[in-house]
Image (cartoon, rainbow, N blue to C red; front, side, top):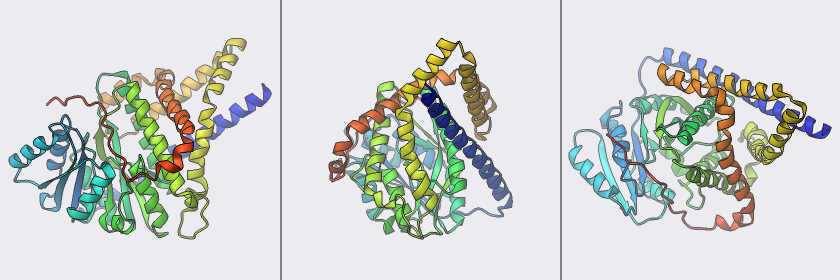
Length: 419
């Protein structure tokens, strides 16, 4: 039991140090962002192509197009390209009707192709249609805040910025599973501010991601053989970029996306993320512990290896939970449980109140759940643990899996958007 105690304490200390570092980095990021905004004399407004990949998204596609069409961005510098990848529902008809009734704003184009998968469809649009300086990928179940494009474009004032990830938030409904994902995203994207500040950003998520078109061409666009084309593309950019080039995170570029609406969907989503990340890591093993001068050693020697080490720590999660339960029940040590609840509640509340784009009502409402979040978050942990175990079971297929030519879509369940 003594060995178990010291092991648990070590893991707790590592996690506490990690969270503290992210909080400090997040605060520094926020202060720098506020100072940068105060120093702006004029807007930087390059041309932007927004690519909207779609497969059976009849319930959400119009909302997505509306958010781009009504963006606070010069219409003459904006184009929207909907990439319909073999939809069998009404997606194509909805986009065609939208084009007919929205002729006075940004240019709207529709590409129809047989089902080849998201990455292949994006590549087709990039090679054949997109002509603007910056490229945004916006999933068709997502939508932009009116100022998202204008705010994101400012980061590309720095010529060394080659890619940018937006601040993704969950579109909330009345379900518990959605609420938990919303809280999770708020915490994760506060962490991304810390990662951006320390220069260890390594995932430009596919929702609202923006790239320089010239840089996409340099790395031959998206690979089509992994479950997570966004992580794969980010690693390709990191491997091939110069030492000066960097990836940015735009906390003020707000994008909203649909959650997984059930535990079953969440488990499938997290497995796709986990196994797709493993595929990407396997393809870029040479990047780990790279000694090349142009590679960021904080990424190659620390952040990426630590992300795998976290999986190992998480694998021990059931043992740690059982150990804590034993301590609490056998020794009547409720102080340990109360301390864990208080620490998580304070941390979660801090993240909620430091999120600048939330309304006061939302901050108050979300804060109410902070004291019970310690227990409720185990629902998300269950989905993550399932994904980890299934990924480990499927490890023998990892090498063979990347020889597929195309990864096609697996459309999740959508709820009809009410206007």
